[in-house]
Amino acid sequence: MLKKIYEHFEEATCVVLLVIMSLLAFVNVITRYFIQYSFAFTEEVEVACLVWLTMLGAAAGFRRKIHLGFDLLSIRFPNLGKNILLPLASILTIFTVSALIWFSVVQIRVEISLDTMTEALNIPHWLYTLAMPAGGILVILRVIEAAWKELMGGKG
Amino acid sequence: MEPVIVFFVLFLALLLLGIPVATSLGFTAIALIWKYNLGIQVLSPNFYANIAKFQLLALPFFILAGLILDRCGISRRLIRFISLLVGPIPGGLAIVTIIVGVIFAGISGSGPADTAALGTILFPAMVAMGYDKGFTSALIAGSGSLAIVIPPSIAFIIYGVIASTSVPALFAAGVIPGIIAALLLTIPSVFIAKRRGWHGERWGNRREIWDAFKGAVWGLAAPGVILGGIYGGIFTATEAAVVAVFYGLFLGLVVYRSLTLPMLYGIFRDATLSSAVIMFIVAFAGLFSWTGSTLGVMDKTSSYLLSMSSNPFVILLLVNVVLFIAGMLMDAISIYYIFLPILLPIMKHFQWDPVWFGVVMTMNLAIGQITPPVAVNLYVIANIADISLERISRSIAPFIGIMLVALLITMLFPSLSTSLPALFGLK
Image 1 (cartoon, rainbow over the protein chains, first blue to last red):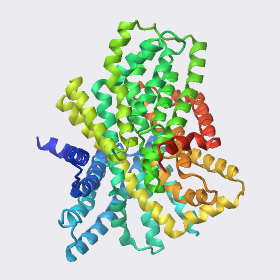
Image 2: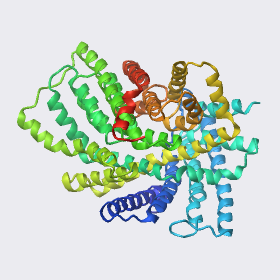
Image 3: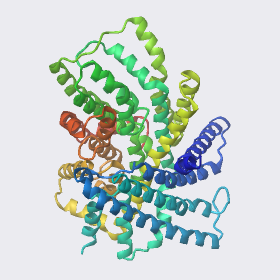
């Protein structure tokens, strides 16, 4: 059970987010069309969900190895691919995402100190910004996990 | 070293080494922001803002709608209906593939999704009828590439966001060039099928056709629901995408009763994964493109291109050659982010219509989806068909060739793209 939660945590959360986004957007179409009223907050929430979905889904994507890349070299030269290119790709991804995490934490601290609120719902904006560092940490975990599996898998 | 050179060489080197596209873009951007002191704090708000756009919400919704409509059984019903109509003519199932490809392109906005929808059913059916595996795979991938030219289209949404062009206008503009491309695709298909002796089964009788029509009518109506809503002025593109999602759910849960809860979970999961992979690229590609513009790399590159000739058609051809090569190596989404900041000043210089240019660029990138070595549609069908990429690559050439003809027609006759948007009063 725990293993299942660990493996599919991001995907399940993403499914919930997409269900929420679809429902909000659909209700908004209906109300706007039939009673000429649209809820201002739906757009804000949908967009924030999209940011969370992107970060969590990206993490799940690294676990499933579905991110796009030019893999001709590693297919032609499997040894080079496994021993050099895969570790290089993992390190560069971890570096890039670490930079994102670092500066999004800086942004969150600024938002907290300035009490930045969201426009429509008037809740603290860092709840939305948090998607980047929180999702970023999961991305790094999944990158390491995938690389580890790949490197170990070949030996057995 | 010149920032222009560092910028493109570093990115290209990482890309060719097989570093994920999102990482190649993000790493290059961060490295240059750091080196040239552009203000690294921009990283987080820029990344966030690249995703947090209302128009981009259409992307996960259209992906979701396409998956729901495919898996609730519409593709199968459409294929049966069209097969009965096409009958025993040479290349029957090949023509069915192209027609259903067009209808499905009117539902889904993604080339790989369209290829998967066609491939899972048509590949086994065609191989059973004696069609060659390589030809069948190439044809399905080629028909799938129509998905981003015929609306709705993820490619047009991205182009609209970057070039600040109306997405409904782009959608309308893609219809005629998309259908021309489909018609052209039938030429090599029928020609090859005739020579190899492949033909359809038989005509359906009136009763069969009527029954098949009743099953397929909901699917045939889907593009009308999606696009009719947009052009009736009822919904925005994003809203139309959501309506398509619920239309699909209504079919799957009420009309056909073919969707189960575990299937729904799988559909939503696959939609989020595909969307996240694209949006992750979008976020870093936006940062990459911001970095290039701030460094002046984009402007310098466009002035360089402009200095090569004062003849607009020469430049247009040159741009398309560059885009074609880029399409062989990269995914369409990154190409929009990297090249549009370079191309927008050129478009302005020659006063090119941005809607028409959007169709030209998208048609070019649609061909990129079936041009090896990097060709998403070929990957998808190679997986379904369980044959090697090399084998498909040998059969894809006639389809690439005929699509290039479609591209040339789109380039030469801008009114094919601009007349429908004008008819609907869209700009």
